[in-house]
Image 1 (cartoon, rainbow, N blue to C red):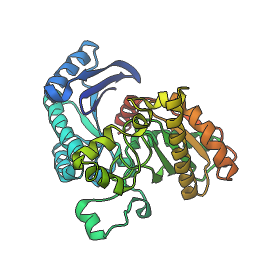
Image 2: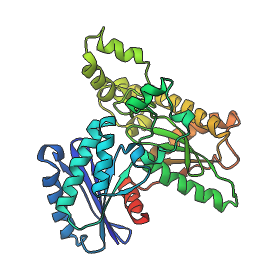
Image 3: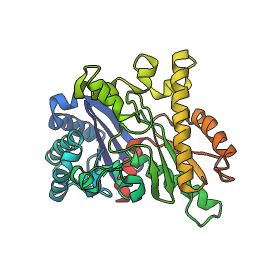
Length: 349
């Protein structure tokens, strides 16, 4: 079986092909939104055909950020999927509208090829009510579909399964209490009990939670109001600053990657690293408290090679607090890239 993975972004389309578990092609189509998904996918199809990827056993999997409660798992890309996407469009208009356009183009460019949608939020549909509920009136929460989500669910789910396998190999039958740390541009920490998420750092949007490369992370709402009002930025300007000009890049003073912040010896990166690691420690402590202790720690994401920096800061603190089980200090690295995780998801379904 072969799989073509499509990851649409704000400005580009990333693709990767897999056959018999081996990557056969990968690349990025720039100007994706500008030229339109149909033109970009025509280019991807030509590349896939050139490497012999497209045949009767090929399937396509399309990555989506937000699937809401309509998509608690992967779903076939069919008419029913479009109806469900339209239902959640107002909850995340930018992401869902773009996904709908891409999904239509997939059907046009790959007619007759089985296709599925895989969402980052699916893993967090079943968050406990105490975790997903905001302290606002139930009527308002229902009207605006206000609740907390996580936005790296594919990584957390795959990494937790890997950590759980290691736990069972040690001879334990009870579900593992897993601290899952995803080192992406917008880092995210989740507490997972067996295969169910218990807590997560993100919220209604990825803006809540840990500081990211350009996202401020959790912030007092009054700050956003002050930026919009007293600072004269207005709602759109305040949002642009908090989403695109803050976080680690804001602390450093120029655009910076998470991996640079975790490893650089430059003084401006040192300050940003201290802030990030401290926030990650607090989030890990929250996760450990919600789980009642930690049996396994697993790292995943684009910057997983920097996991030792985080582990060496966070885990000794948790150990001194008595939050780590006897095996948790032997943390696990889940090194698969997102493309491979998506390909595995397609095969499993």
